Length: 256
Ligand SMILES: Nc1ncnc2c1ncn2[C@@H]1O[C@H](COP(=O)(O)OP(=O)(O)OP(=O)(O)O)[C@@H](O)[C@H]1O
Ligand SMILES: [Mg+2]
Image: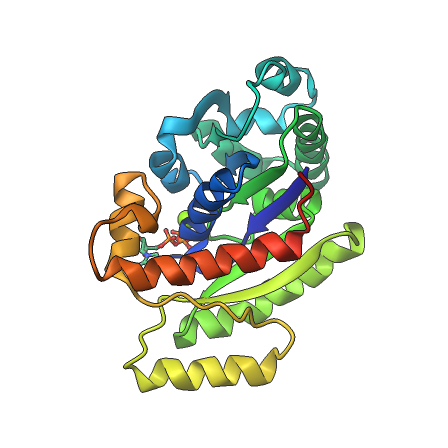
């Protein structure tokens, strides 16, 4: 099982949209996908509610892996998505020590890996907190969606540093890069910021940006991927999101 986390301490940059669309795309590719929602806002849990597993995100921080195995041991054959939904006790993790939270979460992700999933996608909250750090400790890949606005660009330096820091303890963690999101092609400021980012982080810009497209918000609100939205304007969004998913799928080298 390969594990990917979307992380950026800046809010509203497309982390949840990315996780949800990767889940739908990977399902269509025939994969067995676990999604863990570590954000108490529960946005991914809302959009993916039809994939509810009954297992809750805070249970991923208990010390034993037995409960994970008990819940997922008898999964049916074939492609599937199972949601480990956000729940209120997730907020309590921030009171525990980083070492404790990271080791219990990693232990449970390893237990999940033994249940037959090909891929695990983790959505995180917009904060450099203990649970985001735990997700980074347990993951193989991290992806950072970023908005092309000044506040977002100022914050990305911190995020890049946080990822570099976690890599000291989890050297297997690969930073797939930043996904420019909500790009307004007619806004010269966005064009300028994209160029600045490309100059500052030439290795880290993913060549598959996502435009500012209201059909993506429609899709997230309706519990379907954007390629199921029947509007002409959704076509371009679908192409962009599919291109991102194809890029991530290739980089993750998922074996089936
Ligand atoms: N490409 C896009 N174009 C237009 N709207 C978008 C796009 N991507 C996401 N949105 C909308 O923008 C808002 C934020 O997106 P999303 O929830 O994916 O970001 P996030 O980084 O997960 O936010 P948070 O940090 O609050 O968890 C949502 O209302 C979503 O519907
Ligand atoms: Mg989110």
